[in-house]
Image 1 (spheres, one colour):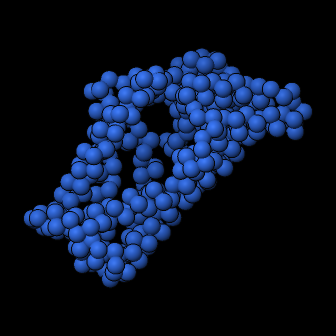
Image 2 (cartoon, rainbow, N blue to C red; image 1 turned 30 degrees about the horizontal axis):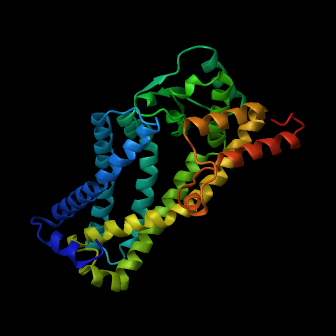
Image 3 (cartoon, helix red, strand yellow; image 1 turned 45 degrees about the vertical axis):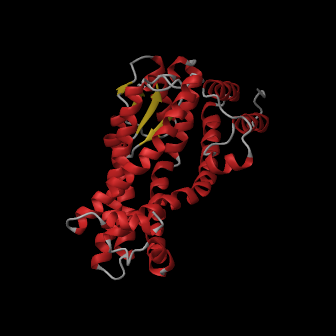
Amino acid sequence: MATPLGARLLGRLRGPWWARALLGVAGLSAAVEALRWPLGMWSETQLRAYGLSTQTWPSWTADRLKDLGVRTALLAVMVLAVVALARRFRRWWIPAAIGAFTLTVAASFAYPVVIEPLFNDFTPMAAGPLRDDLLAMAARDGVPVEDVLVADASRRTTALNAYVSGFGATRRIVVYDTLLRAPAREVELVVAHELGHAKAGDVLYGTLVGGLGAAFGACLLYLVLAAGPVRRRAGVASAADPRAVGLIMGLLSLATVLSGPAQNLVSRQIEARADAHALELTRDPETFVAMQRRLSVTNISDLSPDFLEYVLYGSHPTAPQRIAMARSWALLNGVPEP
């Protein structure tokens, strides 16, 4: 994508500029996925070997194709917008930044009701003591939650998880059906962690920060393309040239990788804060420690990742760090140390 080869291949496309841009995104996305597909299959075999995946190959293929479709559609919108704005405005970075922010916020609102159902079926948690306790805990915490849903994750994985998503009328706590096999107190503690995210507005603030980051990325993209050397190396005249689609896609991909460590650093702080909230809400460090052990064993977590892996991929504190924090919290609050 960062060589003249990409521009020459895209130059063979015919039709209106917008059609060439869309075809370029679709073609390059398919080529990249073809290269990644064998690695994905290898990864899936490893997950199966360790008992973490319960998928069949048809199910795995369907999920991967759906993910490719969603990613390609969003990428096509972004790339087409950049080319269209560059053809119309000299300072196209201004409307591009506004559009990037708007698209990020809109996608975050739409994700729970549009994207998530493509990959999982969600059903309201069955009436009973656990559901009543979870809703009562949310009310006690002052967090308005529209519903508690159960995702049929067991058809895909044995891993345990829960999360909070959405805003206002779409806010819901989602619990993997695999997590329901754990004792009720441990499930409550995981949900208390998720309530910590909701109470602090992590989804909303994360969306706003992500939108600002996308706007900044649009400005940075303009500067890189306007500088000249990158464009000349890729063999394109400007961002208005449909042959620049490959270069734009490559720069967006590179930006995603380079921003990962900073995103993980912020994420680890947010997750630690949610852990502290869960302890304050439940005042049960013993169950917290038991839950962390269960998560580590079931998910086969790496308890001591090397520094580079931790920086690049560690979106949560490690289990030993979280257990140590729970023990420190117990000492500070006069609760028996687990």
